[in-house]
Image 1 (cartoon, rainbow, N blue to C red):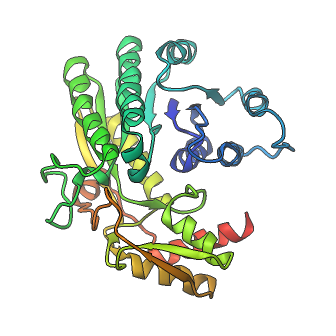
Image 2: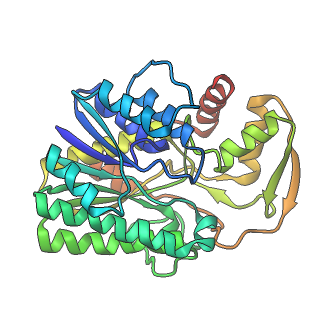
Length: 340
């Protein structure tokens, strides 16, 4: 099976690529190595996920490194330095490799940055995604997984969040673009028979997590004896989902789509365990055996008060069973952080 994975050098994508390669699939990884955060992190993700142990100097030009990686694993793994907003560039990749299945993870991420750059988020998350659907239509790719987000639920008062809940009141541009992707995705399913599942991820964490996200950021600041910015009173809560459980859910989704036709579904992938900000910080402190120095700050615009996934649909339809308790996941993350 030839999988085309967009955003395959990011946090979730690199873990997914690693798993797909380990079970014998071929992978086409498309990533633009955006400067949203240090591109060298994505280089490391790429090397690790492809099992490459080669001496690289990060003083080398970025494209030279990527070219070497691509040449080294050209039999089952190809890496493309490609922006999803460039439809012509994407078309060349589709034409060269004729993928069987697309897993679309690439996006501009982050709630708070989307408030500052809403038009960029529209350009990447909506127009870029439509470019990929257009090429799936043109090249006959009929199996598609798309990364959505728990952010689409906004400040939903009913918990846990169900796929049947209304999601017409997002509170950030990021959330709005993800909801648009779900709606436009249904159009492509309806018109062009693309079997599609939109996965609403709930606060994914674990090794290789982006450094701007809370668990990674807090761990680094506490380790370095720096002050920790603490927004609100600590009662905001998230359904933190460990990376291995998310990847397992994606693979089970791919299996389901392989066996079924006429599919368009939206499915929550969460842990079904809610952790407050206070609990999260204390768990990191306990694991590091080190106290934090908090700076209490006002609640941030665009942040939701809580997320909590109803995973009964994922469990019944996909056989999804998250296995990692939060404290165990934090222990694994901290172990990775301290040795990286």
